[in-house]
Length: 306
Image (cartoon, rainbow, N blue to C red):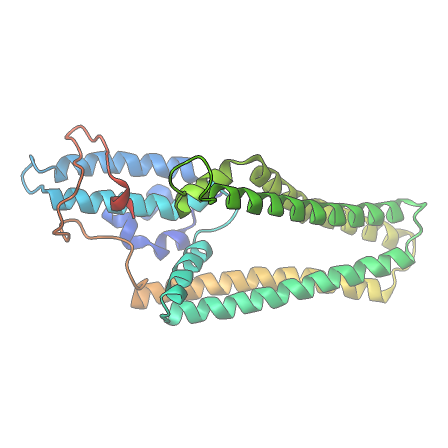
């Protein structure tokens, strides 16, 4: 099924969707494959209208349409990769580019603040989880059901942590090998080709699976153990404090994501996204290196996709 597009994510790039003739009701609640099919359908329809052989059509309009289609597919691509939204990855890419260019705007300031808050909450959650694990280890009797669940939660967390470190190192090594100038291929992969190769690797798929297991299995075992221990005996107040801190950090992190996304969407509505990703059809004067046939066949060179 995959992640579904939200209205907020449509609003973030509304102008780009509308350049392809897509309204919010057509894509809201749909996954990557469904939205890709809608984009392809609208592209074929617009490519016929924009073709130079048609009244009002031109090479410039075809070039703009090609670039807008490529930019929109790039924007929705995270829907197919992980169970994450589109706004934060989009802002991260944009802010990294601005920082590399030594530029700054409100988007960058918002992202820096959000990243700092998220990092502090993540560290707080990790410290609280370790504290809670230590208290449970001391308080639990590992011969009964709650103790077994506590130990299983701790073992799951530690195992998935070290497995994630191993998989990340494997992915890093693979990326270095792909970018090694001494490898058999004549040219190094660009950033997008490198990402595609990484996403296809088994290590990346195992890493996603491991991350999901760690996110759900370990807390479920921990909560089950707490419930059973609470029913059987009095729970130490320090354990409850540690559990409340872990839960509170998770909720605050989710709240921070919500606030940040709303702030960014409001900023886009009032001031725009900065260097707009979409190109109004007909705005370009540079002659494209590829033409879309009247039947809608799409053939665009790499420098056009950019």
